[in-house]
Amino acid sequence: MQIIFSDGFGQHCRSLGVSRETVTDLLENAEKTQSEKFDNLDIRFFVKKEAQAESYLLLMAQLKDKLLHPDVILRFRSDLFPNTAILEPIMILQLLAQEYGMVLRIGRRLGRFYYREDVPLDREQTTVNLVGIVDETGHDFLCSSYVSLSHTASGPVARCALAFCIDKCLYNNWLASSPLQRRPEDPRHRLITRIISVNRKNEIEASCKSEPNTKERFYKIELRLAIELITRIIGEPWYRKVYEGLPKVSGEDNPQLLRHYIRVTGLGHFLNQLWRRDDSNNLQHKIEELQGLSFENAYFELKIAAHFDRRGFDVKFVKRKKGLKTPDFQINSTDGYAFVECKRKDAQGLAIDGDIEKAASQIEEFGGPGVIFVELLETLDRNTVKNMVERARLLLTGKNRIAMCVFTNEELRDEVDTQAMATQVWPITVPGMSLPESIRKAALFQDPVDWFPLSGQR
Image 1 (tube, rainbow, N blue to C red):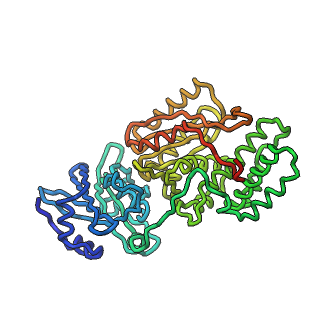
Image 2 (image 1 turned 30 degrees about the vertical axis):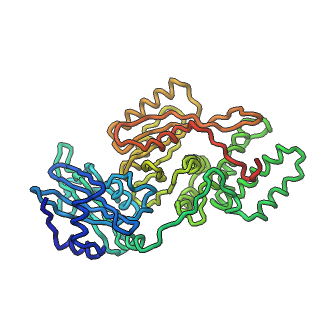
Image 3 (image 1 turned 135 degrees about the horizontal axis):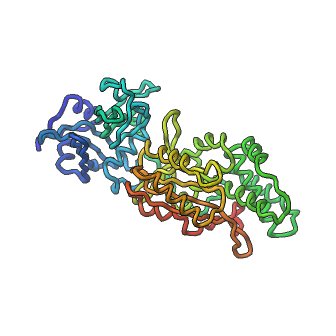
C-alpha cells in the first residue's frame, strides 16, 4: 500500500524525533492495528514499541483510494496505563486526550474526546465554526478532527467520527519527565502513621485508657482516630458542619447511633486507604470538591473508590473543569479500565430518572466504558427494587458507553460478637461497551472486606 506523506505530518514527525523510515516500519510491522469506518471515512490506527525504549508510537492515518495518508503520530510511555498491551489503539488515544488534551466545543457540547457520536447543533451553525478549541493557556496544540455537518429531521447535527486536541506543553512535559516509580505496597493494610505522627496516634490512644471496658476502649480509639484523619484530610470546618447536620439520636442501643459510628469510622478508613503522599490519584482535587457537599455524598463516593483501591485496582480521581462533564474517577486494572460516576438518590421513592440521566451524561460525554453506582436512601421491598431496576434499564437503552449500573444500599447486620454495615447490590448489565471482567466482579461487592483497625490492633 502506497504511503502519502504530507508536509504537516513530516514536520510533526521531526518534532518528535521520528524519521520517515521509522514511520514506514511502524505501518508495515505494527504490533497492534485497528480500523474504524464512519460514513465515508476509513481511519486506520497502528501501534508499535520503540526500539531500546520503554515507549510506543501510535499513528493514525486515513485510507483514501487505496492510498494511506498518515495524519497524526504520538509517542506514549508505558506508565500511561498499567498494561498498555491489552488496550486497543483508540482506547490509548482516549487516555492521552483525557489526560493531556484541551477542551473542544462542538455545538453546545464540551469535551476532550469525541468518538462516534452525533452532536445536535444550533440551526445557524456552519462548517466554518463546527469545532472550536476552548484554550485558556495559550499553549501550542495538536488538533485532529473528523467531523462533518449533517441535516436531519430534528435539525443539523455534527457527525463526529473522532475529534481531540493535545496540549503540546502538558504532553511534552510528561514525555520529558521521569516515569512515576511506585513502591509496591499491600493495599489491604495502610498504616495511618503515613498521615498522622506516631506521637499523635499514641496521644489519642492514651486519652481513652480511662475506659475500663476493653471493647468500648477499642471503639473509642477507632472513632477518635477516624475523626483525626477526617479533620486532617478534609478539614475540621467541614467535619464540624456535617456533624451539626447529622440527625440527633440518643440511647446507647439506638441503631441510628450505631449507624453514625460505623459511617464516621468508615469514612476514616476510606480516606486512609486513598491517601497518597504524592497525591498521584488526585485525591486532594476530589477533597476540594467534597468540602462543599454533605457527609453522605462524601461517604458514598469515597466508599466506592476505596472499595476498588482496597482490592488492588489503580484508582484515579478525574479533575473537574467548569462546563465539562466528567465522571468521578477512573479505575485501571490488568485487563482494562473503566470510568465511574456515583450518585445518591435525590429523594425517597421510585423516581430515579434524573439521577440516572445525569450520571449517564457524565460518562457519555467523557468516554467509556462506564459504571454508574446509585445509593438508595431506604430499604425497599423486592418488587419495588425490581421495578426500579427495569426503569433504569429502559433509561440506559442506547447509552452505548455505559456498561453497568449498580444500585446499592447499606444495612446493619449482626456479625460474630459485633455488628457491621453490609452493602447490598442490584446490578444491571447494559448492552454496549464491555467492562473489564475484574472490574465487573469487584462492582458486585461479593467478596467481604476485612478493614484492619486504624489503631493497628488485630
